[in-house]
Image 1 (tube, rainbow over the protein chains, first blue to last red):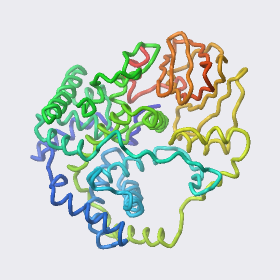
Image 2: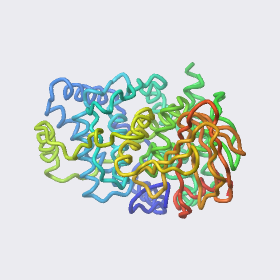
Image 3: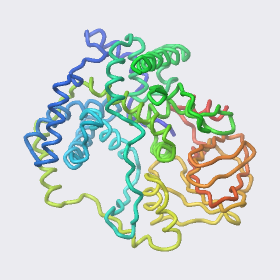
Image 4: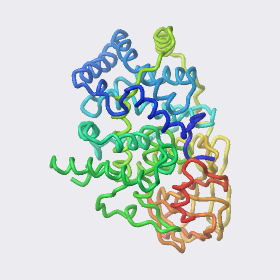
Length: 219
Length: 249
């Protein structure tokens, strides 16, 4: 059994993938298409229009932007093309359903949708086909109230992470990405990049110190 | 501002017991869990451990913050994700799914809590989410089993190969001394228990390796509920190094 679940994903190929991307002149670092502020505002407007008026043109715009990116994320974690597309469709339906819960002061659309996709992806890892509990069932009351996310201001955190991460050296950035976006353990990263475990740990640690240092200067 | 420390693996000076140093057979610290949070954030963590992380987040604000930091980093990387080719009819499929949803079609049968009514339902209602829902759903097919005097357990279906159980320990009652085929992670949900390695309160995680034995006794100030996740002696592959370090192998 593995704590990590990446169906069909060969982590030892990741080092090669990065080399391949580098050879094609593609940057692994942040190409900031998704972090362009005006684009972020436009996408947030779209979600609000879905919530307020069930706007299908707004949904179409969000779909066009995110569907290919969601599919790419799911395939990166090991889904084949058709199951990635199936999960992507479920995520997009959830975007439609949950649009009313989106708060632009709390998070960008991109990180909000990413969390929906991440949760859906974890659901697909669960080997269970039992019926869901009916949340409306009076027997289940009183349900514990949904706690407002008062301990974390995600939007603020996001702005800071975005700013700092763009200044990280490539060698730290690729490892940070492997850990936080591809979900690899430090020893898996060491193996797939052909680096000593200590080097992996110290580079990830350096990246964090950088993030931390910048946050402290802001206060 | 300490709260803004982004590094789940470099902990600020939060004076909570979850921040204490780990011992091989003892209490897990937030430092030990950096890699667990990052693989959770990415969507790669085994479902049983997702349940553990999510339930602990509901109990401990500093865990919720560490998870949110990891999720934010993952979310920022998602902004740079490439565009995969999607099938030509994908947009039509999406709109058809919305039509079906708006027409009131629900893909899955809903389970009525009434079918769960009976002994043991009330106490499950007070568990924090998402443990509450997992326990209620599991309760339709699994029942509380008596282990010894004052000790009961409910097998949970977390959709994982790991064994997942909810323990109910009455005050002063002792789980018989036992060892484990593999590693065991036990999260105290409410109340507390003590064993040779210390006292564990709500939000604490006890770590036990295959060579550890212990004999936990429920604290006297109330019933203790605890979530136990065990690998059942199966070989871990992915995060083997991490698990070995956590349990001191």
